[in-house]
Amino acid sequence: MGFFPSKIKLSLISAILMIHLPLSAFGAAITDIRFWSAPDHTRVVLDSTAPIQYQSSPQEDPAQYKIELTGITSFPKKKEIEVKDKYLLKISLIDLGKGKVQLVLYQKTSLQANIFALKPDLGKTHRLVIDLIDVGQEKKEQEEREKQKEIRQKGTKIVVIDPGHGGEDPGAVGPRKTFEKDVVLKVGEKVVHLINQQKEMKAFLTRKGDYFIPLEERVRIAREYGADLFISLHADGSFNPQVRGSSVYCLSLTGASDQAAKLLADKENMSNILGGAFLRPASLSKDPNLNQILLDLMQNNSMKESFRFAELVLNETKETHPLKFSTYRQANFMVLRAPDIPSVLVELAFITNKEDEHLLSQSVFQEKMAKNLVNAILKYFK
Image (cartoon, rainbow, N blue to C red; front, top):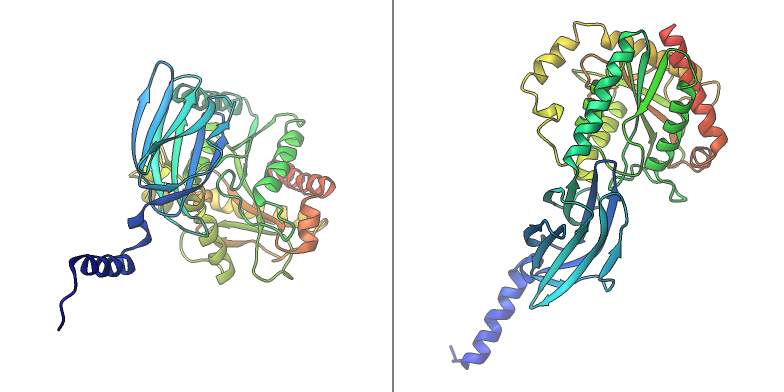
């Protein structure tokens, strides 16, 4: 065996290491920076090719949240992004050299920051998520929801409409790039508007804009309102572009009624991963008694009432749009797990079908579907 000069040996060793080392060992490229505005927080998301190493340092005067990112190979050319929402003025990136970049979040007031990383999943890259939370506003909204229980005691029926997905999680996407999250919010707003014109009824939305709410928190919001009925709105998706129609789902604590229901529940339950859920201590999943409550649910009236309402929705909907299934289906949907509230998940239509996508994007169809739901709600309570 011959002898190689030291420099050649080192080069060979380096080449071998480069072949076997993962891409993340060479650093991370930041590919995009996005933000979402919610009533009680602002979310900032950094997309990257590999996990980002970071160290944070909040500053109170002026209110800035600084994060030093290390091992950065490249980042977007636009080094400053104007936000101008309720909590954030702008986001800036400062090149510190030698693979270090400082991310600065200019706040209007000092906020509580939660920062966490998400691994690639469901078509998403590595993500670094920063939630800047107004704890006072969060508590205020919770107290305002709790106050609604007083009007319930006076005989007013409370309905909570839950537009699915939002923010980081677009839901299903149509051929013309129509997002499920946008369509269901519009229908939800129409339902709430129509219900609030009725006497002795009051409706609320779980989300009022394009931001993500974890599934457990949607359930908690409904319970804080003291809801008499909970409706989660969605637009279905399929790999088969020919499939179309509306459907209604209820909770099952055991097995799904069929494979289609199970697959849909699995997809919807993955929303937390896609949306980037940071589960706070108050979330339902942290309740040590949850399993017992869910078992008790089988002994009370909530599921029976959910089935009754589901049939009413189907009867109303078939006058406007073809049904995918003639009766309701059941599966273990996380968002339907409120133990004391009749709850259903409504798939308005298949957004992946060209005809259904066209209808879903039309205000006239949205209004018709909203009226169908309101008619079912009125019949349910009467």
